[in-house]
Each structure stands twice: as structure tokens, then as C-alpha cells.
Length: 146
Ligand code: DHK
Image (cartoon, rainbow, N blue to C red; front, side, top):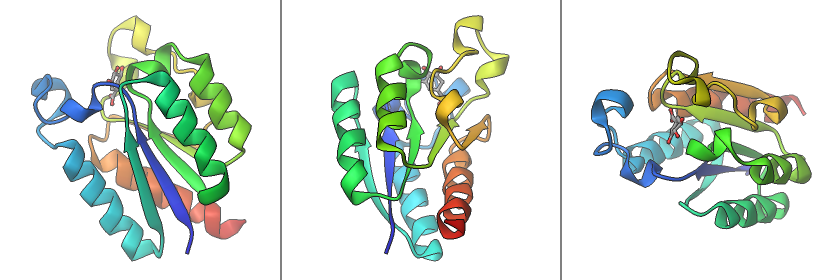
């Protein structure tokens, strides 16, 4: 069975309570439950990690090289700042789906650029937490086509 690594970056541990008018009321646990139930339907398993620390995320991405077939990642604010996370994702050579709960292109200009988008197979923005499910379904198609 193929495993997908679900990665959530800084502040996403506060989903559901943090700025709910922007990010909604669904929690990180809701996201993980949604991804795991979708994965079950698709015949995939899920490893999940959330961290507020860039190096922890880089290490988790490196570890996925030996254990996972694809990565769903919401890098949070590191999307807009982290060459290290982009390089880690490029380095493990797994298909990547980037997710943003909000439509970053309708928000402040500093959120419009993501370092990750250039190496992602697909990017889902503005679909709320359902974006994680859409990303996983897209990756499942890519995995099964390989
Ligand atoms: C989440 C964050 O934490 C922000 O830093 C990004 C993203 C947007 C989201 O929409 O999921 O700018």
C-alpha cells in the first residue's frame, strides 16, 4: 500500500481557533481525519506531521524519501519564505501537492508568491480544508499513473 505524507507547517496546529473568519472552524484533527478517510477510500495510507519549526519539516520530508510515494503539504508561512523546504521537496523527488486553505492570491501581496509552487505537481488554494482532499485525490491519480 502506498503511503502519502501529510505535512502542515507553522500555525496550522491552531486551525479552527486561529482567525476563524479567514481560516474557518475546522481543526487540524478534522483535516487529518478527512485525509485519512479519503486515503482509505483510495487504498492509500497516511503519515502526518505538523511543526512550527522549519528544520523539523525538512527532516520529515527527507525521511519520506524511503517511506512515502507522495507528499501533501501546506507549508503555511514557510511557503513565502523557505528555499530550504522547496529544496527538500525537490531533493526527495516525490510528487508534491501544495495546499492553502485560503486563496493566497486574493490576500496580502507578500502571500502571493510560494517557493513551493514551482516544484509542485498540483496546487489547491481557496477550497478550505476540502483542498487537502482534492490534493490527495489528484496525487492518487499521479501515483497510479506511474
Ligand atoms: C496558511 C498560513 O499559515 C499562511 O501563512 C499562508 C496558508 C496561507 C493557508 O491559506 O492555508 O499565507
